Length: 134
Image (cartoon, rainbow, N blue to C red; front, top):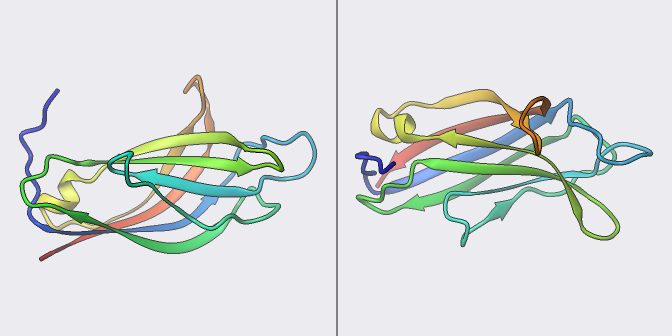
């Protein structure tokens, strides 16, 4: 389905505040989590990796420039557990930011992370999202 929403030119500010109750991916110990996120999969950003925690506090802010009249309105988040070789996906979430842009609103909320089946929560991600017009 195509959105009729068109963005004004500006910058979307995304703060990955923290996560809680992350689903344990390792047999022993806690996760070494990081968050990867994007609007367009060609331009992904990610937080630092934290060690040995299922309740990481990131407090990192990132920016996404939005071109005037773009129809992008979804942020995609994936939380991973870094392993010695590769990473295991803990869960993901998608946030619609159309209201933030069109009505100058601010999101500061927790979002449930769904796993592969989507049937149960794999933790929650606390995000703060705002938009500044150019």
